[in-house]
Image 1 (cartoon, rainbow, N blue to C red):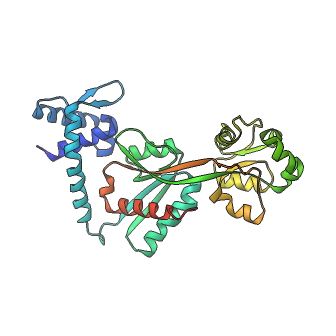
Image 2 (cartoon, helix red, strand yellow; image 1 turned 90 degrees about the vertical axis):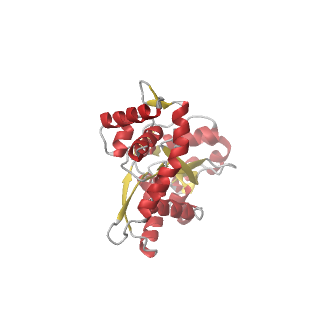
Image 3 (cartoon, rainbow, N blue to C red; image 1 turned 180 degrees about the vertical axis):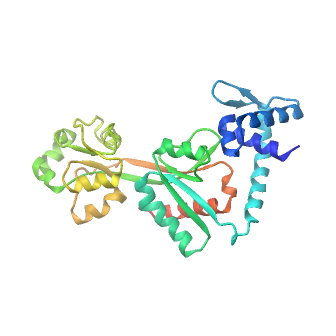
Length: 301
C-alpha cells in the first residue's frame, strides 16, 4: 500500500474535509479526491461518506485511521529528528491573543530559544480564538493558544492555564460611588460607571456580570479597543471600569493605579488551551515549544 495514499487518507480523516486536507498537504482538491478513490479501490471498501460539508469516515475508515496514524506520525518523527539542525533551521509559527502572547508566551519561548539554544526561529500572529484555530487548521500556524477547545480530530487541545478575572477601575471611581454603596448595592452601584472593553459585545464585562451578579451590565461601552493592555491603560487613566486578567493588572493593582471594585468568593476564571494539529507533536521543534509552554504555565499565578 502506497504510504503517500495513507498520508493523504489520515490527513483527510483528521481534517474532515478534502478541501482542508488539500491545503494542509499542498495539493489540489482533485488530487486529494483522486488519491482517496485510488485507496478505496485498492481496499475494495468506501472510506468516507461524502456530505454537503466535508466528509465522515466509515467504520472501515475509522479502523484504518486508528491503525495507520500512529505509524505515519512515527515516520514523521524519524524524518524530523534526522534533519541536520545546522543546515535546517526550523520556524515555529505561534498564534493567539495579543496580550497573552506578548506577556506570557513569547517571554517563555524566547527564554527557551535563547538560553537553551534549541535552534528554531519564532514567528507570532495575533488573533481571536476563531481566527487562530482556522489558521492552525489551514496549516498557517504550528501552535495556537486560545480560550476555545476545538472540536473534531484535526486539532488536539491541552489545557494550558486558568486566568482569574478582576473588576477594576481608577481609585476616584470608588470615591464617587462610595465604598459602602459598592458593598451593599453590588452591580446596581456600577450602573452609571462607563465601561472599557475589547469589543462592542462587552465579552469580559458580560461574562463577569453573569458569573458574579447573575445579571447583565447596564452601562454601554464607552471605550472599545481590541487589546487588553490598552483597556488597562484607559482604566488607569480613569475612563471607566474594566474586567481584566489578574496577571495583566497585578502591577497596577499593587501600586494603586487601579483598585478592585469587587472581591467575589469565587472569582470568574477562563481556561487557555494549547492547540496543535494532531500528529504534529512528532516534529521536535513543535514538541519542544509545546512542552516548554506547559512547563512555564505551571509557574503562572
